[in-house]
Length: 410
Image (cartoon, rainbow, N blue to C red):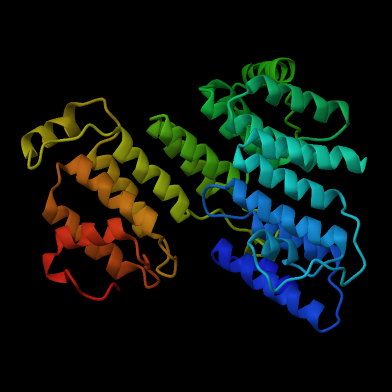
C-alpha cells in the first residue's frame, strides 16, 4: 500500500497527506515503518507542481526527526503546529538515515533556492560522514543554477569528475536549463549536436563533421568540465527541455527541427512501447508529441509574436506573406494541426489549452470567430479534455461564449 501511494502522482499535498496517514496507521497497529518508506514520505513532503517552499523543507525535516527519534510519523509536525494531543515519545526503534535520505533532503532544500535550507541540508550530510553520490552533486547543480552561480556549477561538475562519477543523461538535461538561463545557447546546441550524433551520425561531410564534434567535446570538457559519452542519446526529457529553451529564446525554426528529430527518433526508454516488424521482431516506436511540448510552442507564439490590433486583416495578410518573422498565424496554424493530430485519449491540461488560445489571440488580432472555432475543435477532439477550476480559462470562455456565463464548469 505504501509503495502504491508513493508511486501515484495526485496533487503533491494530497499525496504526502495520504502517505502520512498510511504510515501512522501502520505504527498504531504495531507495524514497523521501514527506512525506504520514511524516505518516500520525506520525498512526498517536498514535492510540488511548481515552486518548493521553505515550509516544505521544514515539513520534510520534521519527518526526518521523527525517523531518527523513533517517533510516530507526523509527531514533530503536530507539535510544531501547537497540537496538545500529541506526545513526543519513542514508539519504535530509531532509524539511521542513508544517502537517499540525505540526498532527498538536499534536493528539497536546493529547490527552495534558500541558502539557509541548503546549508542545513549539507551540514546534515557532512555530519553523517556518508560519502556523497551522483545525485548529491546534481542537487547542488540545481541550486547553483537556480541562483545564477555558473562558477559554482562548474566547481560542482569538477568535483563530480574528481570523484569518478558520471554526469549521466539526467545531469546533462539539467545543465541544458542552466545554460539557457545564462544565455549560453551555444553550449546547449553543442550538447544536443553530440547527443544527436550518438543516435544518428551524419554520414555527409564526415571529416568536417568529425572535426566539428571533436571541437565541441574539447570546448565542453575544458571550459565546463562536461563529458558527453558516445553511448548517451536524447530522451523525451531532453527533447522537451530543448524545445522549451528554444521557444523561450525565440528560436522557432530550431525548436521545430528538434521536434522533427524527436518524432522520428526511436523511443528506447525503459517501458516504451514496442511493435513487431514484418519479420516479427520487436522494434521500438518513435517518440510521440506531448502536451508539454505544444504548451512550450504556444507560449512561444504568445511571447514572441508581434501583437496585432483587433481586427487587422490587411496587416495580418501582409505579415504572413512578407515578414521574415517566424511567429506568424500561418506557422501557428501548422503547429495547431500537429497538436490536433494527437490521439483523442490524450489529456490536454488547462495550461496548454490556455496558451493555445492566447497564441491565436495574439497572432490573429483577437479574431473571435477564429478563437471560437479553435476552442470548439479542441473540445470536440479530446475526450479527456479537462481544465478543472482554472479561473483565467473560465473568464476566457465566457468572453468567447457569453451564453456559458454562470453555467456549471465542464
